[in-house]
Length: 207
Image (cartoon, rainbow, N blue to C red; front, side, top):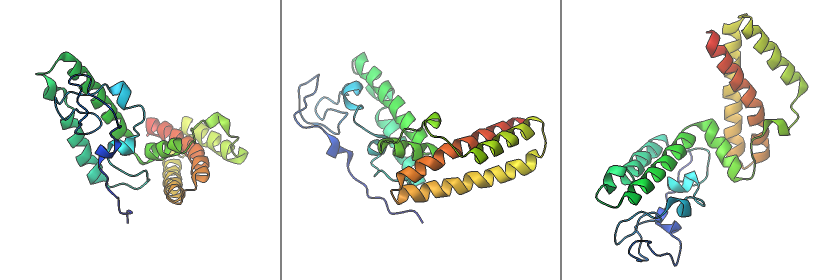
């Protein structure tokens, strides 16, 4: 069962002592839209310190409600769609396109369990760099042998089944480790998982 998710208002992230570039008001609907003239604030000044979870009003955690994520995505896209700003100066349309691109990128990451896990680890200071860690030699030899068999189109069905089971096992372990704030362990598993995922991609070409 998913952990309960505590919602919080994105308006909490409005910086203090900020004025609108257009009307100079310091009243804001949220950190992106002026409460007076409804102009958008410059994205480059607002998105630098916003993570994807904040954008979707979510706490930083591995388990999230898919329905909520989808609904929030649609809501954000409607709020920042360029068509809403066609009666305003062109700069607002350009800003809305930048916000929409950021929203799309955030949604793409958060809806995918593996990308979400990597993103959480990046927020915790773990950048996924495969060449930075020496992986188990036996594991690497196994992967190379499996890749060779797939290339020769041998035992593909069996390899695919076992590989998918390993991916699922690793995924569940990553979810557990991140939930328990064991980020180093999750980081290590993701490095191994990436090789399994590449093997899966190779298999898909030959199936």
